[in-house]
Length: 548
Image (cartoon, rainbow, N blue to C red; front, side):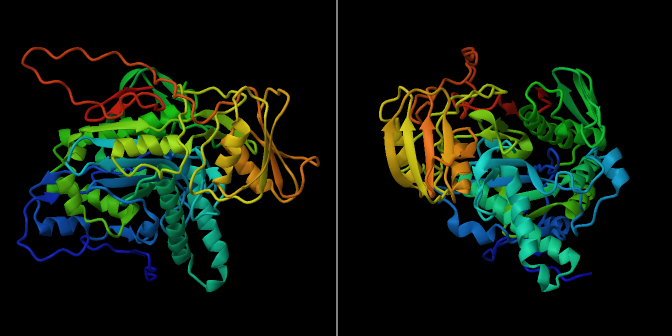
């Protein structure tokens, strides 16, 4: 067996700890890590395991130092809360980079016939915020097609799911002459992908990531098989035949469905023939986590060492966690994970658009940070960042001709000169947008008021293609070259549908007011996400929630 490279190794039992009497309050650890096109699930609970039991279960888990290498750039923590990132990797390869058997990929995973399908996209990204006081856990899903500034990849605007694969490919190209074995190259390049994903998510959300767990398609399948048949609930019957590398193979009835491992993958991967497309798939992933928690509790797995051993043997094969994760401490802090006291939401999308021929989600990075920081209690964005409002989108937003202005993301650094012409009725919009773009590194050029035009446009001169594409992404349009724009310049023209970034946010879809509690009863806990714009309804975990 090849030596493990630095950066991916067998774990210790956690961070160094002062000597103390052994405690019998030990963890369960990961009861499952699951999710779409590969996904992740973490369920922990307090139980009566001793340190010996804990060590026997966790010994052999694969760990990565990727998180340690990006901690310096993390936003500060205000308390002892924990942010756990679950990464679902859409890869048809094993841990050593070998292709999974084609028949298995097609017949069981329903994931196409080619190992190149899906590449190394992180098709599931979910942050779980565990409060320091052990209160309700908040889960936040990031739509995979969100168009963001990548960090530690190539630094350009991409779908957030692509940061992993871009960084992995760059590492392989740079280190091709080092003579690494195939397995070592795979492990080290995956660590580069993890670093890029972690850094990009950390920058996008504006909160520190404390721990992560990663699993690929095979890992999801194996875990689902080890957990056993899982029940899910659907609001409507649905079909999504698998054919020619497309479709999930889903074929489900309305109401309760009992799923084997292959069907579970279909459930969390389906996006065709759903009204909300990708967004409905994200809600499916959240619901499946809840169903797995309910299954483990009902089967008495949580707290039973013998029953846990089989599941942990599977987890050891397929799951990668960070090397600083002291699971004992984490389990004691997060009893509500195993108890199912979790609310899952999906972060909002401003609009759907096309960039370079691909479907993308245009997002407002400042609005995203405000929402996430409000829910997690982390430091607000720096005071010199513009504050964006952003409309609360519908579950499946239509693509209007002009997107709301995107507030600058502090991670983005562009070069070139931007000239801005305002044809909208918004006063001083040219000056305001020029300054906002200057915060990204662009040089303020000429600003002017021009004759009305319906659409916002971005054109560019020689040498500014990359910067212009990133500017265009912020307004939901496509950049185009123009001989009428000087070399080194970008021309932004604000159309009549332009909405300034500080416009009041549209109210989130109203929910019925809760009924007053009966005399002698206690009022339900306040929903921390109430009133915040989210992509669709929250999924309340702890049972078998019904979803589309």
